Length: 72
Image (cartoon, rainbow, N blue to C red; front, side, top):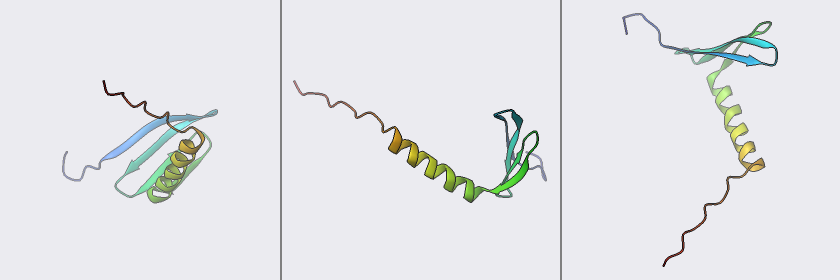
C-alpha cells in the first residue's frame, strides 16, 4: 500500500428496490449510499445492532444439539 492511501471495505447491496453501496474505512463510520437514501452510522452502533440481531436469531432458531457418540 502506498503512503497516504486509505484502506477501504466497499460492498454493493440491494435492499428492496434500493441499490447502492455500504462503505467503511478507518474513520469508524459506515457510509450507506442507496438509490434514494444516504447516511452514516457509527461502527459501534452497527456492531451493537448486529450483536443483538445475532442473539435474537439464535433464540428464534437455536442450533441443533450435537449428537453424542456412544462408546463401544
